[in-house]
Structures are given as structure tokens and as C-alpha cells.
Image (cartoon, rainbow, N blue to C red; front, side):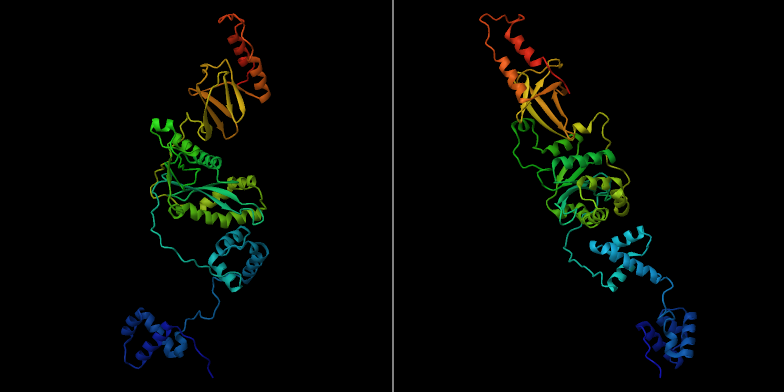
Length: 427
């Protein structure tokens, strides 16, 4: 007794047509047209059907293993390695295929997905897509760079969260990242500084409305008189280089960098865990020593227009004086500047020497160095301890003689200047 024969819908249609041919109700030429095959193929199909019946119409490869199948040992090794090394990290099939390939187990991610599903290690995860109007990419590299910080438990759920600052070029998807404790002005400036050194000065940055990038304060009197908009410290640094800051009104508007958050939260977290990295310094070292390069090689794409919109950093510009913190202070009558209860004594040998009540620009570089500027030129100065300042104040607070000689050697004016400018070390 013959068993059951499983046939596809296409094979059943061939059986019906070939039966009509054998009964004389249909010619082979017409049959080939109905089945959309060549006449010679129709002849071969008819011969097999006449010799073997319905079994002759079934595909010859059915029930046979594929010639392209992987060795059973490879499947066993891949699943075993997944359970031993990667299961705890819940790697998806795509990333898992990349990690296994690094160990010499080369398997296509779709094949690996089927193996994982069959072994009960993976289930399909579908997300309902929200309707959004698609914005086309900018055509030029450097025309628009999206920037944002990703707060996440990068070092595991048992460790404090950190912030990964990211810059993603809108045209190419090229990414640069830096790890910091928080999304601060200093972290943002360090990242843009690195981007400028590596690629050049971009035309515009696309950011959210955090107070690091955008301020809602009222303009100062000086800004009103100059007709300037109020800027954050980061905004002032970008203005020096001619970088426009554009504020996004929603997270979806800067979708490229938001999606890159997801990629890094998936991949970088696993890389940190596999390497046993638990500190921000070690994470930044990993970013600089190849992780971002590999990520860009995999996910970036060429721009629509090959013309690069980055501008070179001018040779006359020192980026340390661009990405810094600045504040103006008024010079006191004793040629000192006070800031947060710290005193700075201006040296007498500065040329030009500022006068009391003049405005002095205090510039803190990111490496901690303080530069004092007057009319754009650096000043020599000495930082005074509170004890030194009090001592100098007591010495200058002496009673004037009954008949002072304004231009003589013993005049109070000369004594005060000697005390104020006698000992100084410039920077």
C-alpha cells in the first residue's frame, strides 16, 4: 500500500494540466503556456508524469538535505558558545553572528536566528511603528550634525548611570562618542573639540533644548546694547567657530542620534561587560581605540553629494581658547581681581598695564589653566592666598604722613605700588 504524497499548489496545477494532455484535451504547446514554462520543459514534465504518475511531478530535492547546509557540528558549537558566553547578555542574532565570527564560527545571522528559535533561546520581538513624516538626510557630510547625551546603566544595573555624549552626522551617520558622568557643558565642548580636530568645523549642530545648548534667560544690558542674543557657554564657544545651533522641538526630530542611542545601548553595553570595563576612563579608552571605528565602518554610508561641508580650523585659532569658560571681572584699586573668594594680583610689568575699574576677562581652559586677558592680551599675575591678601591689605592701610610728597620716594602712592607689585609670578 502506497503512502501519502505531499504536493505543493504548483505541483497540483501541473498534475491537472498533464492529465488533460494525456487525455488529448490539451496540446503540449498550450500546456507550456498555461504553466508558464518552455515547451522543452513541458515535454520533460509530461514524460515523467507518464512514467511515474503524480510522484514524477514532485521536486527531486524534497526530503533531501541542502547542499549548502552547515555541518551539524557548527550548529552545535554555535549554540553551545551562545549558552556559555553570550546568553546572559541577551545578544540578538545579528550581533551574536558578529561575535561568533570573531571566534571563527561564521554563520549568517538569519540562519543563527532560526537555530536560536528552534532551540528556544530567541523569540520574535515586534514593535508597533508610530507614524512619522520622514525627513530626508542632508546631502553633504558636515552640513548638519546631531548631538545628544544618552543616560544609561552602561556598566550594569548594579553601577551608577553615566552619560554617553554622541555626535551623529546627518548625511553619513558617522558617529563620535565620549563618556561622562553627566551631560555637562564641559563634556559637550570636549566632544565637539574632538570632532573639529578629526573632521573639521561643521556648519550646524542639531540639539535638544537642554540648558547646556540653549538658554531662556533674558539678555544682559551689554547684550542688548550690542544687539546680541543670549547664549550659553557652549553656544559662545560654537559662535567663535561659526557653528550654528539649531534646537529640535521633539526627540523624533533628531531621530538619527536617538536611534544611535539604541544601537550603542545594545552593542557598547555588551562590549563593556565582555571586557570587564567598569570606569568612565576605561570606557573612553575603548571608544578611542577602535570601537567607534568599527561601528562607523558597519553603519555609516556615503553622502549623496561627495562635497565635504566641514571647514578647516583656522591656523590662528587655538581650540583651547575656544572651548573654555569665560567671565569678566572689574580690576580693584589694588590691582587685584576677586573671584569666588580667590584673589589674583596683576603684575606691574604688564604692557599695557590695566587701570583700576578696567574690565579683565578671566578664561578657564578645560585643562584647569586660568588666563587673564586685557584688550585681548594675556596678563602676568600671581594668585594670592587669603593670608597673603590680608597681609598686603594691612600693609597698605598705613596712615599718610602730614605732608606727603606726591612724586617723592616716600609717598604713600609709591609705597602702595611697591607692596602691590613687588612679588609676582605670571602665567
